[in-house]
Image (tube, rainbow, N blue to C red; front, side):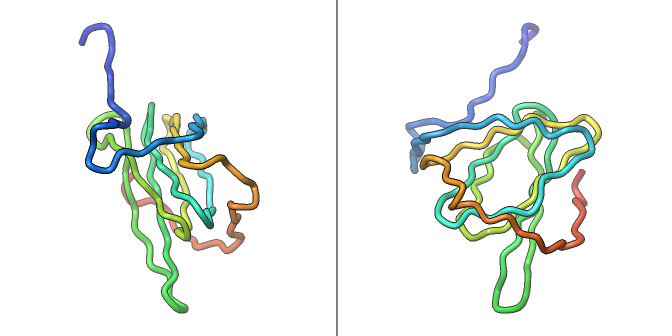
Length: 127
């Protein structure tokens, strides 16, 4: 479209429709990161409205940490990443920066979020 683009974030007619109580927009400054965080009781539903983000998700199995990286952008890798409770995650962006959309199924509570002080020394490979 010469006037711009439209992207669908969510559809109520999908197989597993979701409802959200809160939606946040967060600017991730060029070359910066937000890490490490874990929600105890609810999912994070993340996408990029503008720019490119790499999301590194970490899960602990006994004493071993296993991680996986996901790329979300406003071009070829557009979609919504659902991060279940108990998963540690961090957000990274390139030198363009990004506008992140974060949807919550329940009202945000400070007590639900755990900031992780451990430094995993992980850098995104997909950016």
